[in-house]
Image 1 (tube, rainbow, N blue to C red):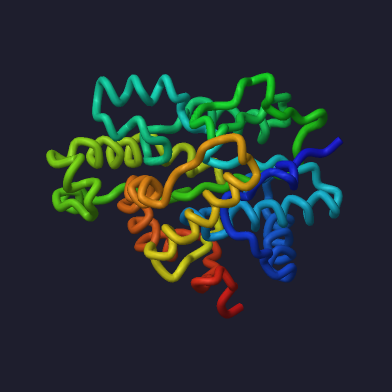
Image 2 (cartoon, one colour):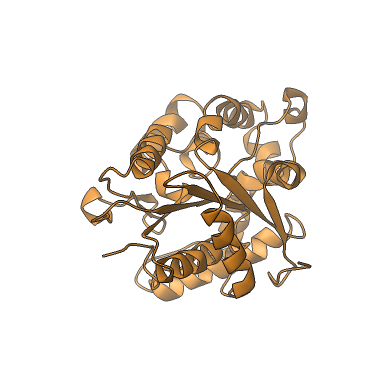
Amino acid sequence: MRYCRPMGTPTHDSPHGFPQALVDEALASIRALPQAIPVWGLSALQGTGKSTFAGQLAKTAEAAGLRTAVLSLDDFYLTRAERQTLARELHPLLATRGPPGTHDLPLALHTLQALREGRPVKLPRFDKLADDRAPESQWPTLDAPAQLVIFEGWCLGTPAQELAALVAPINALERDEDREGLWRSTCNAALARDYPALWNTCDTLWFLQPPGFDNVVDWRWQAEEQLKSAHPDQRGMSRPQLERFVQHYERVSRQALRTLPQRADRVIAVDAQRRVLGG
């Protein structure tokens, strides 16, 4: 049996597929990597299409005979209880999942290292509607070593900002709820100190580049509607709640837009409809 993220799982982003030629290019680049079990990284802001692209690549790789494991940075959020502890001890905004400092990096590094070494390991999953890590009994496992690991994330590969860039708030959330700059400084310090080791697990990094951050709110709202349609018995976010939620990601997202075009091994530009631009 081979494993990739079940195709019935909501993708949380672009409902549109990417050109098969681009997917084939990604698979060819993977085959050229020297690692026995490569980790292919895909970075993209919320809603740009990273889960869709990762799913297409996994399906194509499986059809080519490669046992494939798909992981998302989102799979490694700290539990709700752990984030609530951070919120009490450091800053209330750390209760919200996603920004640097709210991931279980030891779990992520352990999982990726086990996959690279071909050891048995369960693949963590996070329940976004419950805002908590799924029970370990629900985590999928591989019954044979993976031959390819696809690792996608909204800020994969993004470096920390210079301290001077943290002084001025960039949105209402920072202005009203982080007046002293403690939250954004804490997130930036974690990004500088703790995340490079995780970024370095990727043998190559592709970046899906959107027109700008302003597209993220609409795309993320589309994803929220998909989640609520798939799970009508569970309550999601309203539009105002989502707009505030996305502001938690704005600073690092803009840093990704500034830096990843120079850092990634391959940059794929998409338009406001998430169609690939150029070659």
